Image (tube, rainbow, N blue to C red; front, side):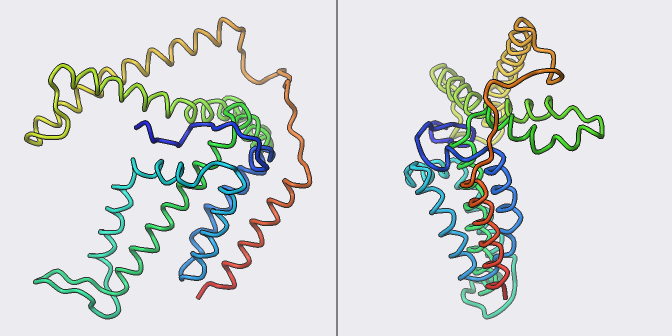
Length: 264
């Protein structure tokens, strides 16, 4: 849990950090859409090179992202195995009894796993290079046209930002509760399945109580400071769209064109 990177912010003086949060949100949104255009080796190489380029420009070590992937590595492996054994097509490359592994299953499993990891890298890059306040301002600015539909845009953006901010906090809290219960003899990794489920329930109850207490404390603090929503509020830091932000959007559209061209 100490290696969970999603929701954390790493302050460095990089060009990615200095991008307008609106540009970063648009880039990530477009990336999530176009990642499904990749369906061959060359297109996935293009996506990987683009992602690695952004990571290098962010000045955050690639090893940091790889370590951050370890907590969800089981999900990647499960996805790979699922496609490996249940996707049929092409030649049989392995057979053991009723179990058959097809070439299409192996290819699909590898591609889907890479796609999943790239999406995690890009989502993590957004939170690692953008403060929660900037994310809130960027989301509110992008969703501003929806105000005409009487939607509480400021409150929605604030809730999403607070949710991202509290992910690492909840992970740390979970780790502390697990260590406290292990010190009292609770075993989370061995024993019958029934006993392990009971141990997880014993972990979830104090975690929920702690989460509700944190939420109540945050609400009390906001009320004590006179928070009344976004109506009539001014901003200390104003968002400024610069040339580098336009170049970032142009770069993601170039990547889109490359993926469409490479698509078979």
